[in-house]
Length: 73
Image (cartoon, rainbow, N blue to C red; front, side):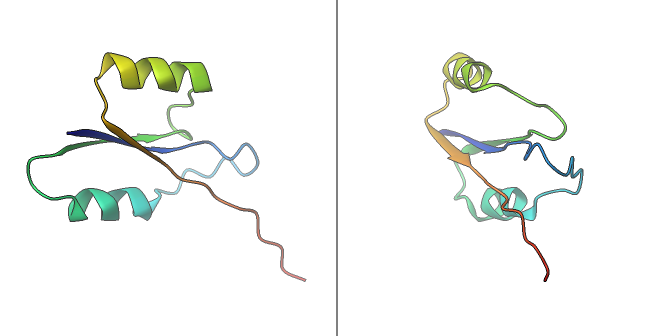
């Protein structure tokens, strides 16, 4: 199965630090599956573009990450 892990641009920090969850899940995925990684900070995609990419690449499973803003008081 082809698996896409997508981390969208959070639109706030323009954080270019790598998101380790994608690499961790990729390394834990059993052999026989292909994992594609897209970081929205480096390659932003609209919802429609993401759907078209998944259809074109015959993706069977999509994982989408999220980052919440934290505030220190």
